Image 1 (cartoon, one colour):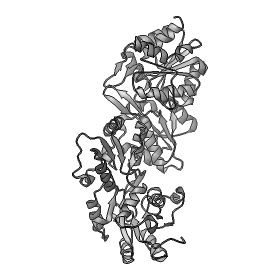
Image 2 (cartoon, one colour):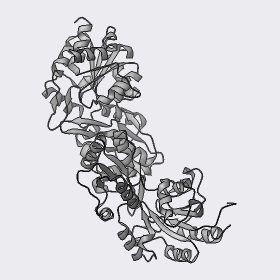
Image 3 (cartoon, rainbow over the protein chains, first blue to last red):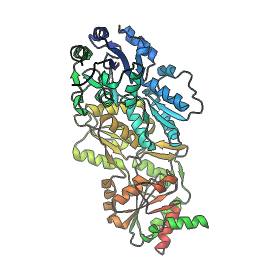
Image 4 (cartoon, each protein chain N blue to C red):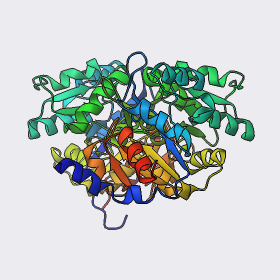
Amino acid sequence: MAGRRALKAVLIDLSGTLHIEDTAVPGAQDALNRLRQAPVAVKFVTNTTKESKRSLLERLQRLNFNLQENEIFTSLSAARSLLEEKQQRPLLLVEDSALEDFTGINTSEPNAVVIGLAPEHFNYQTLNKAFRMILDGASFIAIHKSRYYKRRDGLALGPGPFVAGLEYATDCKATVVGKPEKTFFTQALSDLGCSPSHAVMIGDDARDDVGGAQNAGMLGILVRTGKYRDGDEDKITPPPHLTCNSFPDAVEHILQNLRGRH
Amino acid sequence: MRSLMVVLMAVSSFPACVSELKGVILDLCGVLYDSGEGDGVAIPGSVEAVNKLKASNLKLRFCTNETQATREKFVGKLQRLGFNINVSEVFPPAPAAIAILTHRGLRPHLLVHDGLLPEFDGVETTDPNCVIIGDAAENFSYQNLNQAFKVLIELEKPLLFSLGQGRYYKETDGLKLDVGVYMKALEYACDIKAEVIGKPSQMFFQSVLSDMGLQPHEVLMIGDDLVSDVGGAQSCGMKGVQVRTGKYRPSDERHPSVTADGTVDDLAQAVDMILSHRGH
């Protein structure tokens, strides 16, 4: 890392990295507090699209994590910005709990399809409706395209497979706004006034967290919690900057090796 | 008059290839009938067209990716719609899939339409080591797809069979997503490639040709799906003609990679052109 300037920001994934559903990763709260004592900005970036920022915040605070709502940047925020910019009226295939992040957006006579993680909408009838709209020219926005995520009862399909299926059906590429898109990471860093070369990303998803961040010019640290499966670090090129057991080890590495390095 | 001229010009390569023709393969849904509530509806002129082909000296088979019912059930439906058709003339993917399972000693997890399940009676499905998906329609719930995903992701080498790979088909109330969409979803989720059983797989077309005892260049395929019916048949060495019924869309006639040997309004027109060219 010769020539690399001092680390200024750490982006941290939530689900699978800090917690799995309602259980914190052991030692993660203390590790976050240690990280906050270092002179680096911290931001929480997530593709957990089934929850609004407020409900994410409440869950993390219940688990005794120390953070503020304005430190959270989600793929829902990124989707909302895109709809506002293009002045589109979406059919929102997101869980009810995520709808509050779209408050004020006009959804009558929709001319766009927005797909998040919404198992109760991923039935045959609703997907057919989305399919027909896209075929008739509606724009197609995917909040993210992750393959699967970890639940207490095991792995479960993410929105990615349904987006890939609709892309095949319609011969249209979705505009993806969440991780691993480069613009997602640069948007997350922009209000910190930090360029990607001064930032590191910690996450459990080799492609979406680590690969995406590294593609945007950041360093990526992969943790072996959440959805991590053996050999995931070999699925991306270049490989992760570091692969470690869990979030506290990642923080330790940052404090020992990256902080204030010139 | 002008529209007739356009049709004749568009199909100029098609009747010319018919003189050495010895057999015809027809797709079912979108060519003979449109599916929908109940039995669906026969496409006008198609019952008579099938009768004319049967009265000619051409061999006739039906090749379908239909996986919502057993062969007996949907042949019965076609007979009720007025078609002269027998089970032994119809080639759907499920029986081909069962032959593969037996040959390779596989036990499937099935994500198929309830109507297809009787085809798999007697097939061992405990402790599955592969997944078979068909056009499951309403059974394509998140929960069912997730269950198939979990079976696949637990396998050392995930093995997915898809009964066809169609994008969508037309029912009387509009276009509906087909099995290919869910195949792509599981392929993407598990980072694998499915093995397709049914059109446009060459092996599938070959099994129909060998039942007819004909060479590919002696056979014409007529279907409404440009890529699966026409493109699939052409890549086996057959001729392929598309009908402007069923899932046909005008953009098919400007497709970047598949060009039909002919495009006709419907089956009735295709059959009349074939037979009048042959001097029947």
